[in-house]
Picture (cartoon, rainbow, N blue to C red):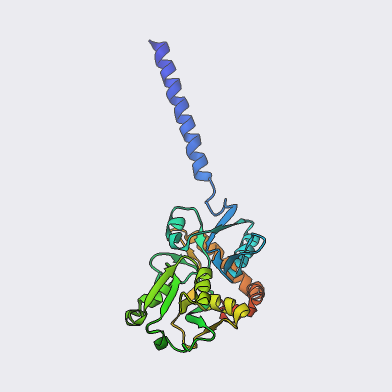
Length: 269
């Protein structure tokens, strides 16, 4: 009997030691961001100049360039993850991406995301065909207007129900590239779109499109994180601030001067 009791006590002590070792290791494990090796950015791959697919199949854009510099300074590998913009919340909340960084409007969304400081001043504008007589928002009465589903442009239009009611129709589409194809083909008469995207199209197709002078609304872009990712947000923000301080941020923005992004930067101003 004593032999069995001794064996039992030995087993209990062994389990206690193992549990103690496990607890010690857990307490000493580094925080997630201290151990981070990758940074996954969710973006719309058809949203130039902020994020888009190049002819060689790579992904590029102003926001991705900024993210690449942040990763270089932090020693992280940048993972460029194109997403369906309408499913951005699911992608973020599931952990498939670490942030939404792609011309992402913060205004009106402050309770849903943990945002960085705003870094770009943006406007929502209307784009129409260059040879069209449309000059003002009032001229869109009876016209077919299109915008991206889940976009800030759609939200801005929804804040103007009387204006939308005057349209012949307000269509929603998955990406702006298709919207511009529809406009050029005559399927739609106008696009409600972010000014940076509009300027990107006008830079190469000024003979086909024109932008109405009065904006639909004004807003700011920021990086959206999960509400509990304060440490990650703070790390990224501190790195962006360093980039502003040493001039790297504006160097990157100057690469997109053809689309006036260098004039739209508001971080550090």
